[in-house]
Length: 212
Image (cartoon, rainbow, N blue to C red; front, side, top):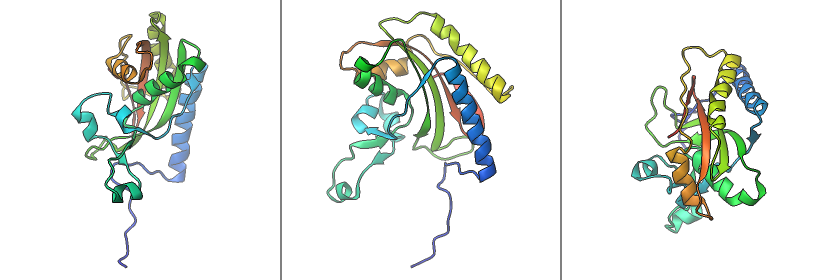
């Protein structure tokens, strides 16, 4: 058997212990900031039903999805029914739709987990990276004050992280299209929940952006 040269898969980030400590401290700072403003943590599985993930948008999304298939299913020629999440929006919509009866609204949630994009690996663009989300989900309507709160959260985090001009931010409207599509595709009741949200991606540098 030929020797295999060990190497990190393209488009992923692997840190040495000292770097990992710094990275973990950054995530801890973000987590504390989210909780300071009353956001509650959730985690969702790294993979979702493929039909749920593909309900968000069209063909471009499908090209970026990593499908999950067992060896047995592959040998039998079955179509993969699971896929790695490419963001945290669709999993959130599925989570709220599934657990709506057990949640208190407005539902203030934060989520810090890895996501996966099957795109060409290049400088500044990763196939595996962390996404840091906060969302406020309301039933039928949501006061504008929740949107106004988002810049305050961002300012607090960036101040704690000492992020200067290298950080960029934007916030979405009160019912962002990404959340709207995802919710409509997973909601059993068929109703849309208003949303105020902010998303940050942690790659080699910290950037923040709203999803619309």
